[in-house]
Length: 637
Image (cartoon, rainbow, N blue to C red; front, side):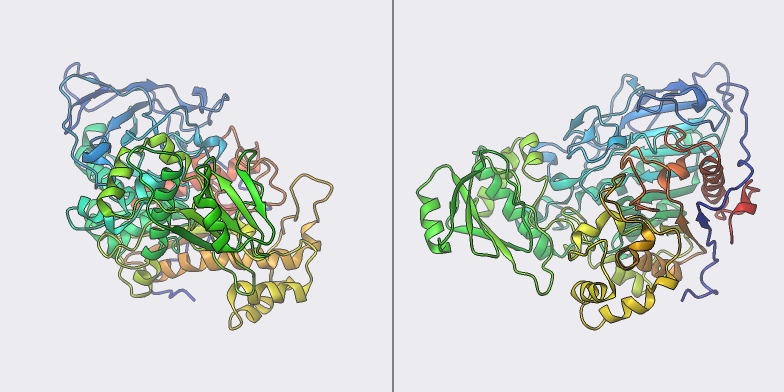
């Protein structure tokens, strides 16, 4: 239960049945670039601490493209200035930059063209709205969207999502928000994947305080410092800065609120966390396995400076990719032992390693192998083991291998790595290194070690679990109560599992229930016929995302406003058919930002207008209800 003395409950139970009838007030700013400036000062020219930048003017967003080939959103009806692709740190390249904390940029003298987004950081292309046109290891840039009207305006700094492996500052769902009419809105890139979260003792000497594995988080802090130092020049109020993030972006915000990121809490004043994954922090031991995997993979690919070490590195898992691409499998041994497999693979230059399935069948893999896929061990299931020829083991040789590796190759061999997705963490995530991250975020929250005086707006979605059910023990759409009980005991353990049936009984499940199946298929089972599956999905989403978020609200060092988003979108640019997704993880994003290219006319856009107004009001005043947001009558409090 959340203490009423600590939390001011802004529990907006937004459902598809609720249809707000009014839009949030918008302000029509009729005079372009009406800045409080003397003489003929160019409103598109701003001098930053690193040098001058020239931005561009944007028409009202109702006439602006969203980046996906359609029109954007209907509001705010105000002209804007956009400054994009501004470097906020030195390029993180080579000996001086790769796997080091961000370094101060040397700056520039000539006016920098800030008309376009910089390249996204290297990563897999994970979803449609990422809007990625180019990628580079040199990617630490920041973007400022600011009203043409005079400030100072409240500032929102948005941390993109992407499981710390994907995401970009120009994501079409979040690069032109509906509340930008009188808010300065900032997005930025930070290092992701192995470039942002590779951890190993061999890397500690590259950090002035002997840390490792959290370079992406340090990029974020560097960006916040840039905002605090420069935002006044863009019409922003450095005394009203709100950090805002969804999913891993919300996790990042939580880091800057709690013990590990405490040094940055004097740089902002409010925080918005949408479906944060507060359990995403990785133990150092598991992060080290990814380090071993990268060295082995680069060595198998013949990367310069990567010399094979002795023996093999082994990765135990419950599941690996069994449908290997053509040309990857070079031999299958039905009765081979591990000892025989090592001897055989040693004699073959083509053999990179082998996979021993739970049925003991051994599959030999060629140097074309780019991945293995692994989930956490689930009690009671047989385990597979992947063996790969070891990469360099001497720390100096390891650094030589990593620093000489081509960035594109590094990106390609780390799409999937040994310690990959679970309901608790991700392949790449903040690492407990004892320096920059000293403990899990959830532990800091439990101890109440949270920034004081920072007001929070946070919440989760009703169906957080639907997107990730493949990472739990198998469960049929037609599962009955007995199957649910077995699933719960396997997933949660014997002590917790039995309580799932009681807490998520049919009569306690909030409606509507998502269908179960591939989505948009005759094979889909209606939600009312898949209640056990939905109970499992709801419990998993609550355990991983909602419950930790509520604990954070309870321990908040300021006021906390909590919401539950329960809308099943009509469609999703990233997922298509949503009938089996429900109010899925990330479903609220288009509603918050007012993405009319994705939202349906009528109640979806009305709900969106109210949500955008609440978020804007919170950033300006620390209270989502401080301003009169039309649509209030449609939301239950």
